[in-house]
Image (cartoon, rainbow, N blue to C red; front, side, top):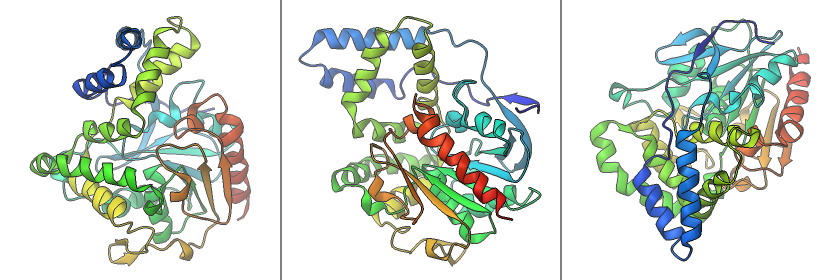
Length: 356
């Protein structure tokens, strides 16, 4: 297990959905025919806001920095395994609680595990697009390690990790619920995402940043009924139960997150979702085309057939593909996560790490 010092997570979560007015409007429309459901969801929201969260979350100790980004050390031995989270939401989904921590579990299996923490950008970072996150933050961080790492990228972090693997030597690349072929998102989803960006773009241009609220409202639109139903269900959970504690930890993650630099968000909305520059081979990073077929390292896709956030049709399409029956977040922290994702991922890392 990790014996290194740890540091507190750098941002206290907001104990309620962001933005709350939009959530309440969604609640009104979803429960228009059922005052009982509305009351239950509001009771769940109140219980969530008032829940006892215990000691403050502590993540792995910071060992290396590159500007605002950090590499957090979770201990272990052997070849470094670097987990790259999405730019959206905080990094601690892979270290949610002591009982639900992919990172600590992998370290206990004998891997030397590291976590990329993207930090919090300010308006001065507005010109950093996704490629800049690769070349100016991620690659300098992994260059500090004693040997080429195995890269594990989750969600948009997988997209970014794939670009890094195209530009620098790595021992392996695992993409978990990571989009690459954005044409694999259905037309309705892409249309909603385009409308969301059109509405938010003028204010974001002025700020130089894209607040988490903009992105979260887009996630809610994917399945508003489920968003309300989970608060209804929480209202019925015994306070302090294991299920209730898990719900609070997960919602704290979902309701937190740093803003995105304007250029990164604009490239995501316009380059990835609108133009599919990754899937069509048009993504250039520092003038270099990012093409997955040129990867020289072992690669694997972990793809969920039940993912409502990143559809299976958007995956990279590696020959080595492991399919799961879990949700986008459930595959990381759900009851079946260890059997469906953690153990197969550990087996793959062990095979790759042993291929010297």
